[in-house]
Length: 221
Image (tube, rainbow, N blue to C red; front, side, top):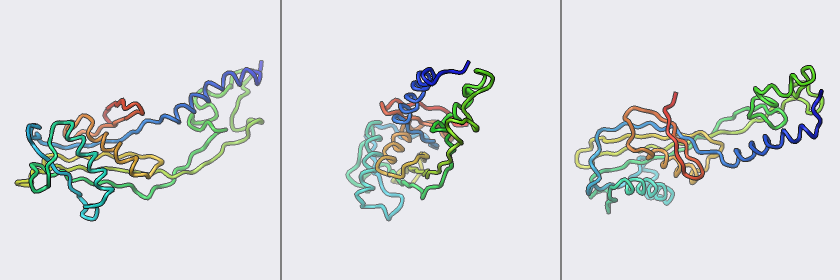
């Protein structure tokens, strides 16, 4: 027996609401790679954040992001120096976002995230002899192909001992998103990079940051 449209509406509405809610609270995800030697204990050790790219030095945008890096190090226990010349450690910082690339997505009646009209649930096939929503569904038509731009953004942090230039730490965080707005991306990337700082040397992990600032860390495949 075929399901009535009223029954279908009752079943489909919770799914549509779940999709809508998940779209409104997509967590930020970044891949973080870190390499380090034993860092000096944060007992009076001072640091200064400097631009890896000289073209960024002195800019207001760089200063804003550098403050985010400094706040992370201050929370760990290090002290921000008055100038690079008096710092125990120099923190070389850089950030970027690429020009973007196109990605193609196929939507089946607006539910493309499930890989089809109802994805691997198989639609409603099996009810009433295999009737279901799909490629040949008479009510909803065929798939809709959409394209959109995705961007890769990243931050890069290197920490050197100022007196002799010895490298103490190298870290990178990268994310793929549909936004290229650095004022939103860079603080999240910095947050991800310093989650569990300094981390395990040579390990790459996926850091997920939710809207409520809850974070999860898992190894990448």
